[in-house]
Length: 388
Image (cartoon, rainbow, N blue to C red; front, side, top):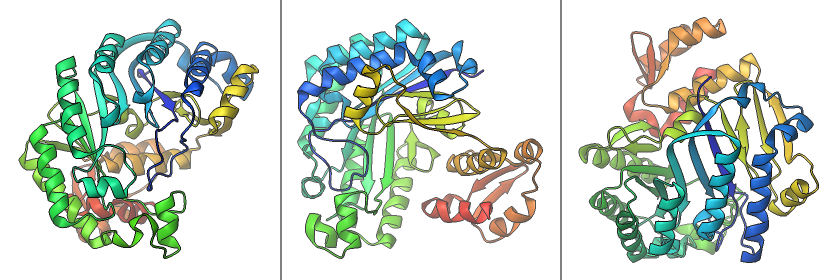
């Protein structure tokens, strides 16, 4: 069995960004420690809680954990001792041979003392919520950090010994222009992080900004969003500049210096097993997917009462597995092994793929099927056509 990845969710933030549709919240710091204690208890008692939820966990019992990702929310808000507690709980209850231990951090929360403690706890990778290098865009999005904080945080992490830093950018923020997007890309490249993620702005009713746009309102700079065409151009410019700077694109939204692709996130796209702990965390064993309660307070109450926090369990059918293989596999620039998938799932994809290849939406080299390099910004539409 492949090694396990573990994800731990810390659903707390200092403020709610206007575009955020995650199950996170702004709460009193007094709730941090009880929540972390609950997550540590879930880790300790996971096996019996899976039995309560009807999850077959035999295939997970002897697996070794090689990647850990603590995300949120803003887990860097926590006192380092609480994060150390989580890592220790994992080491005490699983066979751990960590290769990659990632912490999500916002620039304004990164301090020298914290960074040193993170390194001491075993974190060797920081994923920084940079989003933009333009203060007007950061303000409009409700972010607390500013451009200067990014520079200060990057220096602090390097001085603490972190040699693997990832920066996130969002294409399509309110007030963003072609010139300001180019500025963010240029400044990011100058700081030379090992990894870069570029996410396209999503508009849905789950965020304050999205709801405002859908209702044709003007709050949160909703009328100053770039057009869809501009966002596609931003993405393609990012592709070009990052490639010229020596980054390899390995997934639709992700670039890395050679050999530094995210080991943990690759597990998701390759459908390898991972366990999620904490409120709203998801897990995948290979044959089942399950998810925890979203509300942090209800989650803590369930753990305290000895109940399972699992709120949904899904057995992955052959049809669902095939859809996942295609959707997740084609997000990777390496593409999918058409022959393997046809053999494993007993399907014929040749006829479906042929018109997409002929239209220049996909490319095929022997048995490897990929999205065409210039069509990654419309990947969802192409993949949907293949799944029809």
